[in-house]
Amino acid sequence: MPELPEVETTLRGLSPHLSGQRIKQVTIRNPHLRWPIPDNLPGILRTQTIHSLQRRAKYLLLQCDSGTLILHLGMSGSLRVLPANTPAEKHDHFDLLLHNGTVMRLRDPRRFGAVLWHPEQTGKQRDIALHPLLANLGPEPLLDDFNAAYLYRATRKRSASIKQVIMDSHVVVGVGNIYASESLFHAGIRPQLAANKLSLPRCARLVQTIRDTLSASIAQGGSTLRDFTDSDGKPGYFQQSYMVYGRTGEPCRICGTAIKQIVQGQRSTFYCPSCQK
Ligand SMILES: [Zn+2]
Image (cartoon, rainbow, N blue to C red; front, side):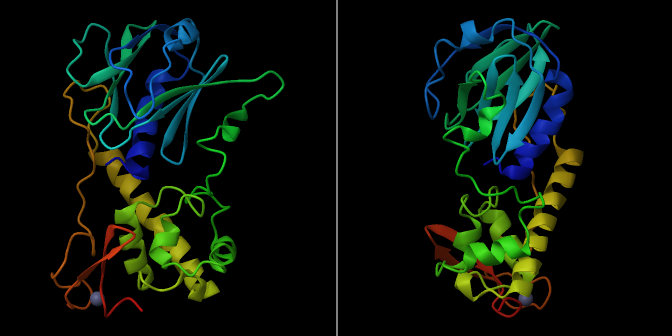
């Protein structure tokens, strides 16, 4: 599944190809994604210019003349920029044809992705942050408003496990299952610990390891992800070696203790019972 680092890498890969480009035509081959693609989108987007690309949580936001195109990759989506005459394949559901002779194409075999339009309302310029999908999201993990004091405050009334709390997008966005396990390992924090038991210094440590884990993955993505203008259709989700994730029973890379696997909130958690307290 594309996680925050893949979405960030997609953003960085696509930006130079899309920013400043004018849309010539929109093709919807299959509107049945997580939510239906609005059928008036082709009429709305034709002749609009894409001014900039941004990311909020795992949403890609293409700022156009009269509003924002919201894209989400769901479980299996990928985006790429191709020559306009490239034949579409089975799971290529959505195209933005550009005036420069290229097409931005969404492929999404499992169709949990999304293509939505948020019109800019008069007098409320750039009000995309108020969109219902975005309005209640917590801070971005790589920005300054996610910090030790914030995490300490946000966890005081939470008796749920710290792993489940850092995966809650109201607390902080983009910390998926893999990154939660890995960050907690690097911070030496046991995933079952009640969130409100975390001291301020341990909150500081965890904020840092979340940032480091995501940043390392983004850095790796930049170097390993396929070219976004390559027509071979495989999404380049990162293959990485993890400290604990997926390593049940294998020796901890630090202390040699067997890695344990438990289930929290219906998701697998991996941790070292010696290194994590
Ligand atoms: Zn260990």
